[in-house]
Length: 482
Ligand code: NAD
Image (cartoon, rainbow, N blue to C red; front, top):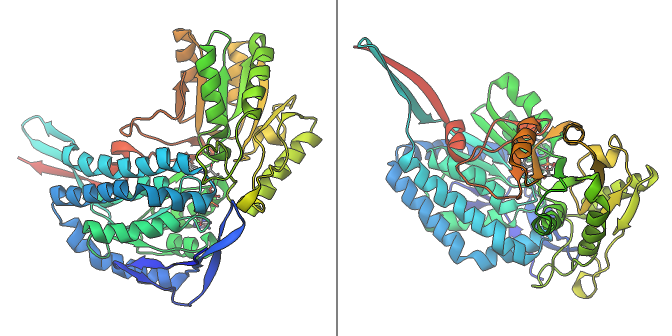
């Protein structure tokens, strides 16, 4: 396998790290090293900030129509290079290439399309105070902003942040996850091809505690849009808050999937298999705690177990694979530790629970059988802590109130699904669930205009749609006395 060198993208150029040091990037499906990744530090971040500052005047004063054209060209280039990007994303992360090709890459393209056109249609508030004054909101780009993103949906999540930041006229420092840097690396080249001016986007690769921390600490970075783990979010907030940086934190989840006996059963079952195990359960929005009304429980557990056991765990590059490798050896160990912990807490593993053996080139990869665990107390670790792997717990409830108590019984509040045919119950549950996202009889269906984000330990701030454009701009209040 070719060994790729992943350098920083600073001022429109691939730039080796100042200290000349690199770490290995590993393909989780094979365990083989396939890249050397820039191990950036303070100097690289400082260099990227200077490039971003130099690029800001030109980019922020580029008319919205021209910014939109450049970002639309970039979206188009993502579409044209979709196959190569999907393969890179699969090798980086272990996810099935079919998933990368059908979800991650098209959504990355859609992010640029959406925000490129949104800036042409957004409105800003204006208020007349009798005939005495005119007040209006003046939105301006913030300057240099940072986008720090995780490994689970690499290109999709980095572009989810970059697209509104750039569309609003900011210069951006992006820090993709050190575990999955490849697609962001390819994006840099596409930015040049699309005509994005040098310095508008700078990509710094490296470790969170080094390159990431240097970004958060840099005094000239005005805002940080972060997606990742809750503990990392708390550490970032501790540094950024006293510096009064604008901050949005999209963090972990322990999402309930609440299933009532009156639901459309077949649709629920199909979707629940997907919402549990898509991307090996490594989507922050996956439903990891399934709560089933008691009268439906035995039917559900029999069918769900059968469907789960039938999922094909295999080589991510093969078309028929449902479940690929988890992202790293370290993450594999963490997930397996959770499974052992659940066993020790009295959980019954009804299917899965072991390392999955995938032969051929994937012999040494990190694969886990999709796992369903029952008979656990709501307070145990497997029901409280984010596992972020192909592992779900299944429990029961008798009443709507009990369902709500269980659904809300963790520190998290990211997403939830409710399955019922009763419209009043759906409204009652949607209002009562402590989660930033509520799906009724569906999962992962989103309109990009909708604000997105969690509550409780799942984060602060809202991304997506016009909320993201608002985040990446100042809202100055201007009053003119007439
Ligand atoms: P992580 O917190 O370890 O890392 C996320 C990013 O932050 C990486 O780029 C990392 O290098 C960087 N980072 C780490 N420490 C840092 C520090 N001290 N300062 C600055 N940057 C730092 O998360 P992960 O393991 O990459 O991703 C998995 C987590 O992300 C899960 O908890 C998942 O729920 C969460 N997630 C949340 C959402 C959401 O929308 N809420 C979406 C996807 C993933």
